[in-house]
Length: 123
Length: 123
DNA sequence: ATATTTGTTATATTCATAGTATAACAGATT
DNA sequence: AATCTGTTATACTATGAATATAACAAATAT
Image (cartoon, rainbow over all chains, first blue to last red; front, side, top):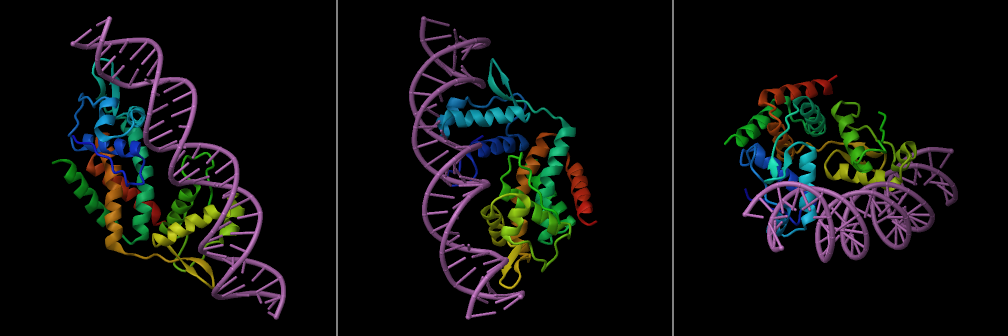
């Protein structure tokens, strides 16, 4: 998978990295057990500092998307604490859906968007 | 509506303000034409600086949730550019739903969460 | 008319975070 | 022994968040 950085974005580099790797897992381009490039290698590839990549990896580890394997390095390992995940998802959705309601987007229209996104992930 | 600030949150004050006011519109606690407290009054009430409140109001104006009425001050006025709103909603949902997919949350479970949140808004 | 309130703008300061840079360390591999 | 992994420490720069004081134009109220 090709990880890229938008240097003009107002989003922090380490956030962009986290989101792209999570995206990669969602579309199954990264699979359980796959190892990510080393912090130094990835930093070199995309032209940013090693510590910024390390920060992203550390967060992904805390949030249960990867783990450290002393043999391979950082590998994909999703800790599916579903109960916790649903709670976090609900909170994030509240903010997003409040905007939708303000803009007169209906519940049915949201469902359509959800279906479309899920469909995109599985192909 | 009572606007509050979580001083221990890692979210910026002005972001918290924006989200709460958007929330207030979504649950119809704020209605079209209602006027918000003045920047100085609200800042005084919640114990933060005037400019921080002004920053939130400026963003809400840019994103089409309020407008300036020279007579009343800042009033609720939702600019429902639905086409644009759906595009923004879709982008925000992609990030949130990617996490959901990683954590094995199904499309149906997301629909249930969406319904529950929409239900909460309309009461 | 005068005083007050509205949002807005300008300037300056403090503080936290993001990102970079160089260096070193413990485990594991080659 | 040399090389790779993530990790930690320290230091620096730049940017944004939040505060503080001050002033301005437009509208309102007395």
